[in-house]
Image 1 (cartoon, rainbow, N blue to C red):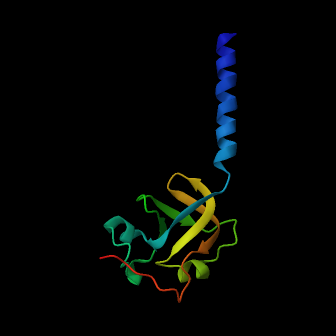
Image 2 (cartoon, rainbow, N blue to C red):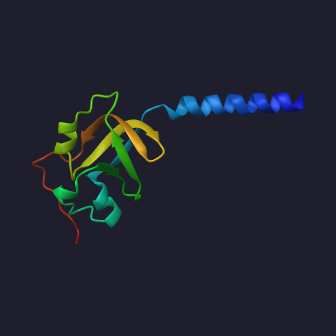
Image 3 (cartoon, one colour):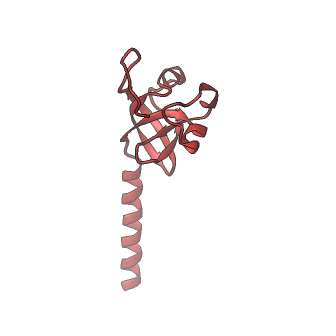
Length: 115
């Protein structure tokens, strides 16, 4: 009986964690090219290095971006390249399935880099 109870608890925990893993989360970061994130060139990422684009956080985490099942279009993501955004999506490992995002420093707003 003890073994059955343990298996039941493990099963319930697995279902519970799977249910909450599919909840969208919000992550603040910057849209940069994967190569820029790997080389640490966040403030001066070349447009030639933009493909594939990733979400880079100030903590140094990098998330590949999947545009599926949400309202995010590639054109909007392209316009946000190099900018800080608040992205909402479902995180699976190092992938974020983008549901929506908001540019935190839209074009025209001055941005200053320390350097």
